[in-house]
Image 1 (cartoon, helix red, strand yellow):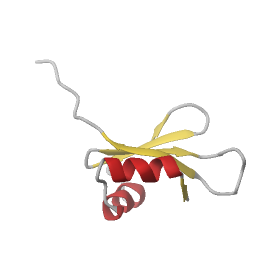
Image 2 (cartoon, helix red, strand yellow):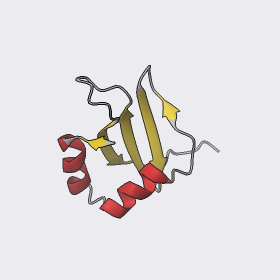
Image 3 (cartoon, rainbow, N blue to C red):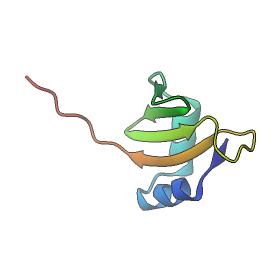
Length: 77
């Protein structure tokens, strides 16, 4: 798994530790969410990772395109 410079910058901006990143990447709580042919979202503990399964140019590895904190959705009563 490769990590883009953009994802590394977002980790720094959102103060996401390497340990938190690895926890989301390796032990997600929910099933991955597919968004298109080769994009996956992986979430845990209010953090979302966006993964490209077939980045171009192809290096043989998946690419973490970005990572960011997410807010809980408001629920209707």
